[in-house]
Image 1 (tube, helix red, strand yellow):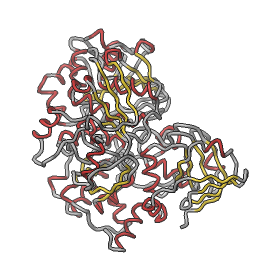
Image 2 (spheres, chains in turn green, blue):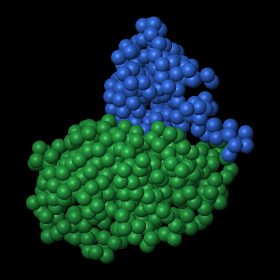
Image 3 (cartoon, each protein chain N blue to C red):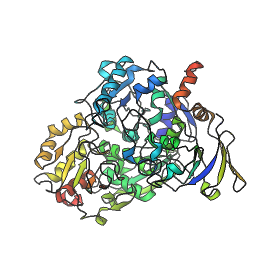
Image 4 (cartoon, one colour):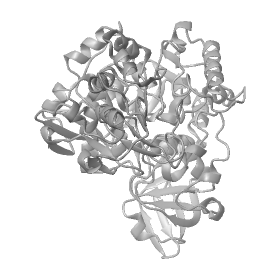
Length: 428
Length: 172
């Protein structure tokens, strides 16, 4: 009996010949582990003091990243409780724990934590890679097993060990070819619309087929990033040569990519025709009300945002520039574009993409999470936003009366241009 | 701690979102270094009086995909802090499941639990034996207990205290 990519990664990481769904395994984490000032995580310096811990399992593999909050509006103006102070405290703690100076990163070299795992080559294909933040699973886009371990993280940093339940896998076979202007994001939201928010509970969503083979790394990362919203443990794509080349250019650490066997066992298989997928829009306030764009076209928007772990990659900024070139953002719209990382911002600047976006009247923010959790330019009363960020419940991006529609970066750019939700295909 | 609980059942629906339903996102104090006063906001978007109505030891009985959405442990802590002793769900979001174990919020997965329990029923739970007794209906339900190493973490109170136990025993 063949094995899935996830079963192979977990068998290797737990030192077993093979593992099967339902089994619990203990894994020693060998990849780099980020400690960042992210929202849901455990405050490390305080937790280590509280439990009397004075060492890390492997300080050489810990990196400090001023992620979610690092470059943004303070949480409060209290001098002891703001984002820069959190980052300073984490950095000082890390130095005291023996983390090498080159692992302590600050603004100018960083970005959103999930982009960082890809940009720096930490989330190696075929490896187990963990993070405290929900969207850890983004790295499934490069064939890396990246479950979120929020409240386990302090214990894991101390012991190097953690546990996983081997998940069942569902295969999503996307055939045909996507229309121009339909992105990885649309494929994921389409699947969510089909299987619902409880469609893959505790399971792996393995995306395969001709559409996935052709899809860019950026599109794959976006789909895997969002897989939590169908209840999945994570999403994953079998890595191909372009993924392997990306990592070989970024790290000297050896890695062994894994791919699913042809006779691997899946609990279910879904087949979708990629050519029939339209641009998708998620309508507030629920995360799972998914509609074809034709059902919501014309709804006026006051804000547009491309960024967060779900977008803000090269391809996302490139398609926004393609749509906006020679046009101006609608006068009633503030269009915030936040590159996912300094590296992506630099590449986009070198390509001329950033200049096109600035000429069109976009507001380019410092790399990071951007408006997604309500940082930097939070939504104010009754504003309406179209965004390619993660989610849309009331208050997520600012005021609780603001409404958040979710769509692909192409849909966001076309909507920013017209001041209302707009099908991007007519601009491509 | 024997992982036995007694309390009154509070019934909720499917797909309770961590930030939308379990604790309002803006009340989570994301990024702060304390997790205080989260219980005051537990489930208030669904039932504004919930934290005042709950008695220590009460039990949440919920539907499918409990704790979906983001992996914010503040939601699990809010439930624990407001006095709930255990959450029984028809299924759990994976991140909510994991965070519950790590912060020491006992959980039980039981398909169709809402068919067996009504709001206000008195329940007695034993996580080691895998037993839910509905005192109000005089029915007993059996479930497969969690593996021992997860019960050990729940017994220790949280994953950090569990690690300290392992350190003291020379196991890590």
